[in-house]
Length: 115
Image (tube, rainbow, N blue to C red):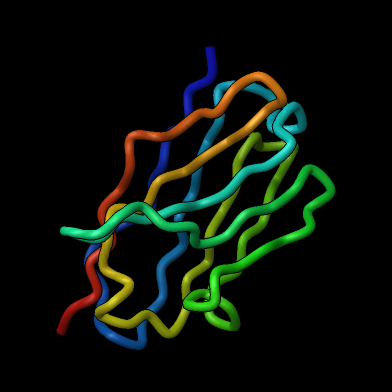
Protein backbone atom coordinates (compact mmCIF):
# COMPACT_ATOMS: atom_id res chain seq x y z
CA UNK A 1 0.00 0.00 0.00
CA UNK A 2 1.29 3.45 -0.90
CA UNK A 3 0.26 6.68 0.75
CA UNK A 4 0.99 10.11 -0.66
CA UNK A 5 0.49 13.15 1.56
CA UNK A 6 0.54 16.64 0.08
CA UNK A 7 1.38 19.81 1.99
CA UNK A 8 2.25 23.44 1.33
CA UNK A 9 -0.91 24.70 -0.29
CA UNK A 10 -2.84 27.78 0.69
CA UNK A 11 -3.78 31.29 -0.35
CA UNK A 12 -1.28 33.45 -2.23
CA UNK A 13 -1.50 36.72 -4.12
CA UNK A 14 -0.99 36.87 -7.88
CA UNK A 15 2.71 36.89 -8.67
CA UNK A 16 3.54 35.02 -5.49
CA UNK A 17 5.12 31.63 -4.91
CA UNK A 18 4.29 28.38 -3.17
CA UNK A 19 6.10 25.10 -2.79
CA UNK A 20 4.05 21.93 -2.64
CA UNK A 21 5.46 18.79 -1.08
CA UNK A 22 4.36 15.19 -1.49
CA UNK A 23 5.67 12.72 1.03
CA UNK A 24 5.43 9.06 0.10
CA UNK A 25 5.12 6.17 2.53
CA UNK A 26 7.64 4.18 0.53
CA UNK A 27 10.99 4.75 -1.11
CA UNK A 28 10.13 6.86 -4.16
CA UNK A 29 12.79 5.18 -6.23
CA UNK A 30 10.25 2.42 -6.86
CA UNK A 31 8.10 4.84 -8.84
CA UNK A 32 8.70 5.08 -12.56
CA UNK A 33 6.96 8.41 -12.63
CA UNK A 34 5.88 10.96 -10.05
CA UNK A 35 4.03 14.12 -10.72
CA UNK A 36 1.47 16.75 -9.99
CA UNK A 37 -1.97 17.20 -11.45
CA UNK A 38 -4.62 19.78 -10.71
CA UNK A 39 -8.37 20.16 -10.95
CA UNK A 40 -10.15 23.48 -11.00
CA UNK A 41 -13.88 23.77 -10.26
CA UNK A 42 -15.93 22.56 -13.20
CA UNK A 43 -12.89 21.31 -15.07
CA UNK A 44 -11.20 17.97 -15.60
CA UNK A 45 -8.04 16.98 -13.82
CA UNK A 46 -5.00 18.00 -15.83
CA UNK A 47 -1.30 17.35 -15.85
CA UNK A 48 0.95 20.00 -14.31
CA UNK A 49 4.36 18.33 -14.20
CA UNK A 50 5.96 14.91 -13.95
CA UNK A 51 9.41 13.58 -13.15
CA UNK A 52 10.86 10.22 -14.09
CA UNK A 53 12.97 8.08 -11.80
CA UNK A 54 16.02 9.63 -13.46
CA UNK A 55 14.54 13.07 -12.72
CA UNK A 56 13.70 13.98 -16.27
CA UNK A 57 10.91 16.57 -16.02
CA UNK A 58 7.91 17.18 -18.22
CA UNK A 59 5.68 20.23 -17.91
CA UNK A 60 2.31 21.32 -19.16
CA UNK A 61 2.49 24.43 -21.32
CA UNK A 62 0.77 26.39 -18.57
CA UNK A 63 3.51 25.45 -16.09
CA UNK A 64 6.55 25.73 -18.32
CA UNK A 65 8.94 28.42 -17.13
CA UNK A 66 7.06 29.07 -13.89
CA UNK A 67 6.93 25.73 -12.09
CA UNK A 68 9.73 23.33 -11.19
CA UNK A 69 9.31 19.72 -10.16
CA UNK A 70 11.99 17.98 -8.16
CA UNK A 71 12.48 14.73 -6.27
CA UNK A 72 14.42 14.06 -3.08
CA UNK A 73 14.91 10.31 -2.93
CA UNK A 74 16.49 10.50 0.52
CA UNK A 75 13.34 12.15 1.93
CA UNK A 76 10.89 10.16 -0.22
CA UNK A 77 9.41 13.47 -1.29
CA UNK A 78 8.56 15.18 -4.55
CA UNK A 79 8.18 18.94 -4.73
CA UNK A 80 6.50 21.45 -6.97
CA UNK A 81 7.92 24.95 -6.79
CA UNK A 82 5.39 27.37 -8.23
CA UNK A 83 6.43 30.92 -9.06
CA UNK A 84 4.64 33.83 -10.73
CA UNK A 85 1.31 32.35 -9.74
CA UNK A 86 -1.81 33.46 -11.57
CA UNK A 87 -5.49 33.32 -10.58
CA UNK A 88 -5.97 30.60 -13.20
CA UNK A 89 -3.59 28.39 -11.22
CA UNK A 90 -6.27 28.11 -8.54
CA UNK A 91 -7.16 24.44 -8.17
CA UNK A 92 -6.85 21.36 -6.03
CA UNK A 93 -3.40 19.91 -6.65
CA UNK A 94 -2.87 16.16 -6.52
CA UNK A 95 0.32 14.18 -6.17
CA UNK A 96 0.58 11.09 -8.34
CA UNK A 97 2.98 8.17 -8.36
CA UNK A 98 3.14 5.28 -10.79
CA UNK A 99 4.77 1.88 -10.84
CA UNK A 100 4.45 -0.82 -13.48
CA UNK A 101 1.56 -2.26 -11.50
CA UNK A 102 -0.03 0.65 -9.69
CA UNK A 103 -1.21 4.23 -9.96
CA UNK A 104 -1.48 6.17 -6.71
CA UNK A 105 -2.98 9.52 -5.74
CA UNK A 106 -2.76 11.83 -2.79
CA UNK A 107 -5.83 13.35 -1.22
CA UNK A 108 -5.26 16.73 -2.86
CA UNK A 109 -4.44 20.17 -1.53
CA UNK A 110 -6.03 23.50 -2.29
CA UNK A 111 -4.07 26.30 -3.93
CA UNK A 112 -5.87 29.63 -4.26
CA UNK A 113 -4.34 32.57 -6.09
CA UNK A 114 -6.27 35.72 -5.33
CA UNK A 115 -5.78 39.30 -4.25
